[in-house]
Length: 326
Image (cartoon, rainbow, N blue to C red; front, side):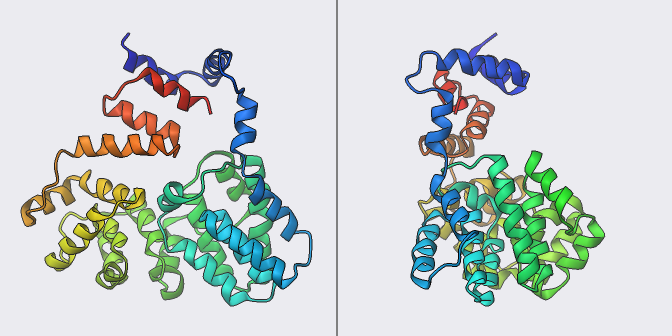
């Protein structure tokens, strides 16, 4: 069996076998697996949550914590900011923070948020408290339900099950249609509903939705909305606008913009559209993907997933073991 097949086997073997491998690997490491977990744990965010959920905050104290949370740029840090605003009787600002979360694709936070970890048990404890607090005090259950759907649609495992068990939010396609058809909670958040419609319904319903959200105006404000076109069979928007904004994304150097560009190039429809309408030199997409995933690995972002993607591309290295034990 070649090295690539051996590495791929790590993703397919049982949990017990993988744990045995980790133990063997870590015997020769200077830092053990528990220490790795402690080292990577987001103690500051957990401490901030414990503090703000148990005390009345002074305005100066709130400002300091809000400033620290803003730097983390994660879903949870934004929601904790929303809770602090709500606790200080600023419900409008609390809702604005939740809407800010919903304005981005879920992948945005996976790539750009601070990379310290929180255990699933801690996440469930914190989210349960925050979501219940929002439901009780914001008087905007539709917005909170939209947030719950956003979280549920993009997660798996115990956290996903926790949301199922504890809360009510749109789940069936008919319920989703009821939400995405409204201006305040559907058309306002295409990054929430478009991925779900694309996955659960027909290409025609998806196309109808992105037409309703007035996509051209959203693209002009933020080029990342081009991402919603990647699965469209026939792009009917103004060609110059689409190409200009794609070029803008293509010139950016941040990981998220590169991820969007690669995701679009990786779909046959959008690749053919560019090939037919643009003189832009795209290059070999596989090479670009390989470079991108290696940059994720260097930045310690989504390590197990990134290793798997590199293996799919035929990039095989024994050095990848180190990323699978953390």
